[in-house]
Length: 236
Image 1 (cartoon, helix red, strand yellow):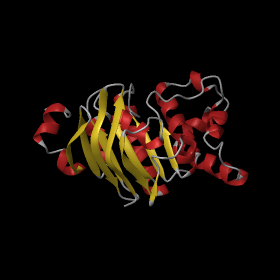
Image 2 (cartoon, helix red, strand yellow; image 1 turned 90 degrees about the vertical axis):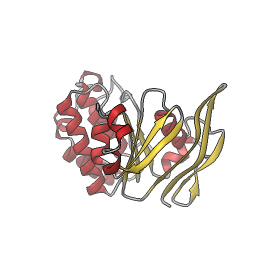
Image 3 (cartoon, helix red, strand yellow; image 1 turned 180 degrees about the vertical axis):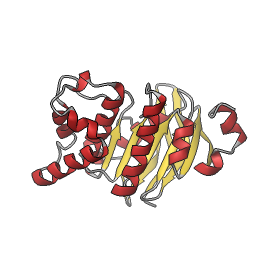
Image 4 (cartoon, one colour; image 1 turned 30 degrees about the vertical axis):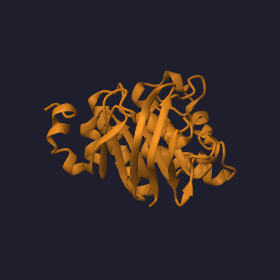
């Protein structure tokens, strides 16, 4: 298996944030984790990157166990995360924000090529190249956050609520961009989203998290038809 989480538990003090979850991802696919606030979605991504320590279980990526590694080593293996809230550098230019995504790399010419690749996906960033990141619109900042992650040349991209706070037309554009990047760059994606409609539309498989448990796991096209999902996550 390309990526797998086995019986993962995470505890915050005396609170069990994740209760033995199991997640698999095949290379080149998009999976999505949907659920309400506090369900454990962001904690799952942080467990993958080593930003929170797991209490028990194992995480495997390309036949290597990664839950025992520090975050910087996880990144160097080809895993990049776009955090909730974007967390761009507000006083740095768009160009310098993008270059920060390549800070572990030393292949200067390839970095230039990858920056042009980012501009192909998000032309607006090229127009704003010397503008400070903090002066961009919310949608542009999300494009910048995704572009910065792509500059690390990852194999696995973790996206935490990329549609958060965006207007409906921008949500659609971000969803389309994720799909195109997945297809053209052969990039595997784990997408955390409260916008279940968008997430299930662009993903291959979905997991529904509720209070730290996976309560449903199906192909996305089947989850869209599920009565529980329709009632609680798709508006009936």
